[in-house]
Image (cartoon, rainbow, N blue to C red; front, top):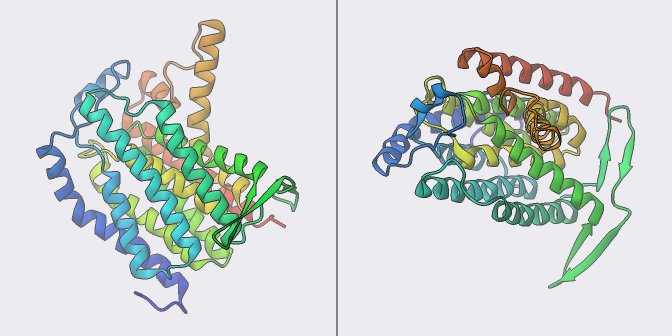
Length: 343
């Protein structure tokens, strides 16, 4: 284990450095491999015309993000059950995203797996994660709000004994975990539409979650969050405009799942909705657009997700990205401030 566990803050900063360094070193080799294998991004035909030049840009950079994150966690953190569970959910979701990316590339279209197939995979991950978190990590099946207000979602609970192991299934909380994990994974995925956007905003959100995990006295989860942030830092070197590689669903779905996992394991689910407020706004813009068009035949935004709306208004891609980074940082600061009001 690198670093002295007696100095958890040092380990957290070391995790950022190790993950970033690993991605910086490995990414050029991955980019070359993707070019050789002709694994390039498929651009939406109805998107901004300026995005057509991105057609064929190497994708699946999320693979290297996950590798960098795992290297940092294994070298620095203590392999607690909580850490392994967060890693497992993140990697499993990343694997699902990888299948989605490969399907998209091989079929030559911007969409990969069918929504039904993707939902089956995400549902399985959510069920396993929730049951393990409650049964083995001591996560309370409740939703805590700033100010000390709490809603108990464990009122309808079943217990199963399998092979001498007792599994607790809080049904209402399971539904809540499903909505949070699936919703956040897809929200980060929707945010991944401009060079550097998902990577930069995920970096900010993960840094805030590292601080929250540290304040919750779980330095290993803090290292995990810091490793995710560090991996995003390394990735941004190659994903900044004009991008040399995209993270793909492999990265965006995994980062969303990792973010939600941290929220659940630290019982900061509500706070996470504020910390990840930009992702929520992106997802809501799509929901509003679809609902409005189906109900009235009219669009609220020039294009959804909302970052494309501002592109259509004439904003440069870099201006949209930097301003969205600022908004993500503001949401993160607000969420961290609200954490201190938790009872």
